[in-house]
Length: 305
Ligand SMILES: [Zn+2]
Image (cartoon, rainbow, N blue to C red; front, top):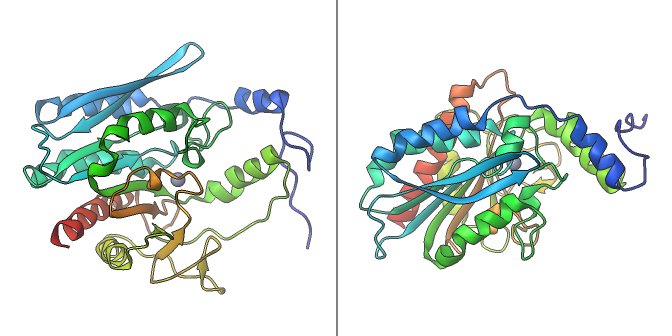
């Protein structure tokens, strides 16, 4: 065994300080436009949905309006459904899947649920195709009191008055090859820890909450997505990314303890989707469709329960 090449920033074994963080930031390049890809599509939805701005991210000279889409005619007697995408900005199908769900399917649920959809929680990272915000903070480990991530704090403020009202929350993610080639090595380097390589699961899976796993709900989502794209098999240890596979394509995490977006609400039915976009067997359109299938299956299961 040879040890992996050290990450190109910092000294192995020593957590990053301000100099290393600023070296990392200086390497991040804007590669796509949140305004063109996301805000334009949200604007077009104003004819049928309410659009609200729940915050403004400000990073240096750049700012990003944070926008959410809500059912028109929100009714207090209906159950709430929260859909979040782009908590990790690079996980493209989460953002585009959330938008596609609203554009093509949300109308089917009118009068049955109150929808709140936040397609892109982390717009700066969406533009850089990165996991962290510019302060080298992962928003999806930051859903906690006194959050170190503006992105997560803004979502927590948006959801706080409604937290008990949700029946369903689907948080849309991807697991990518760049997790192993860039993001996990960067994380280990940032924290001064050794990087331990792992395999990237080939296919879709969901992450439930260890404290309240709702196995029937998770399996219904996997069954719906299996019609669109392949499901990740367990590895030789019976695991996916180091967690025991409890049913095909289902693992559980300590969601709240880890500060994940999936623990943001008190919804009875909560899941985190993980689409695999780097498979030669999955096109971007299929990945978006997989996210949409997961959202629809989640709502359908919860309404029938
Ligand atoms: Zn993610």
